[in-house]
Structures are given as structure tokens and as C-alpha cells.
Length: 118
Image (cartoon, rainbow, N blue to C red; front, side, top):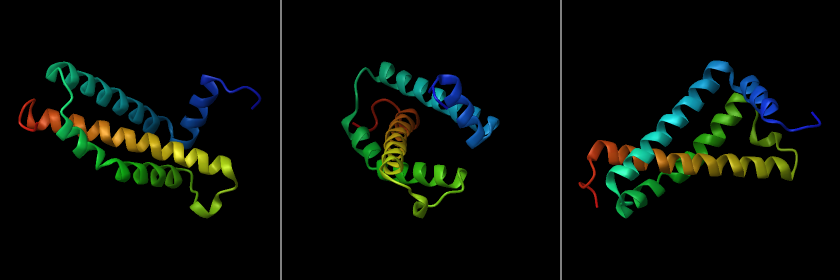
């Protein structure tokens, strides 16, 4: 793998997760992103109370993302080979944390309405 292209990344992710799970994860990410943008446009502002509650979910999202990737790749934390593995797991944890915060903020806004929590 000399060149890192989009097609190469797509093939690797489909190999790791399987075609259906990968497509489901991409679909879920698109749905949550569209719902988040809808909530921001509908409310016309960010609710800092909802944002704080969403931030409390970030550690759980980070741990869940790392656990999910380790489970899908049949790996363990003891299999870490060097600094790049740690950097990659920190990146996965960061994406999981941000994803959890966006998901929780969106769910709060869709379930409880625009002005119930402010």
C-alpha cells in the first residue's frame, strides 16, 4: 500500500467491519449529522445546558469507540506495537467522544423540544 487513497480506505474499512455494518455506520452518521443541523437551524442557538449534558457523555463515547474497534479487529490493548497505535487509538477515542456529544445533544433537542431545557 504505497498510496493512501479514498478507495483504499474504503476497502480497508469494509474489510474490517463488513459491508453491511460499515454502510450502516455511515448511514447512521449521516442521519445524526442531518438531525443535528436541523436542531441547530430550528432552535437558532446552542443551548448551553444541553451542551454541558452532552459533554458529560464524551468519556463514555470515547471508551465505546475504542472498545468497538478493538472488538471488530480482534485486538487487545496488549497488542499495541508503538506510538502510532497509541495515536490511532487516541484519534478513535476523540471521534467517539465528539460523536457521542453530538448524538446526545441532538437526542435531547428532538425529544424534549426546543425550549424545555435552557
